[in-house]
Image 1 (cartoon, rainbow, N blue to C red):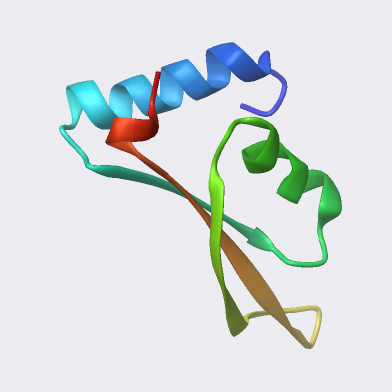
Image 2: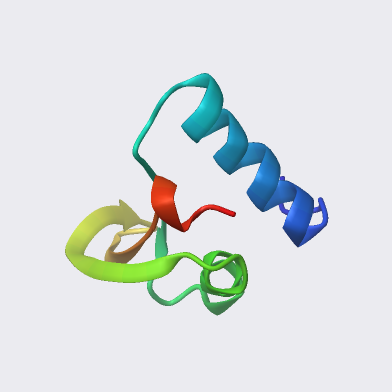
Length: 76
């Protein structure tokens, strides 16, 4: 999905989450050290909500995960 234009991606994913599924919140979680992945939710208007320490192990090393959120009332 990262290859799609930002505006369409946000609308498509969030429209489905909020309107089709009736969800209140949409979340994206990425590794804290992955700056390219972190740029996507930031560019799409998601708010950084917190960091989960030692969330997952990859290649023998524990990684932290940053959580971004977008609430239904923030979706335009």
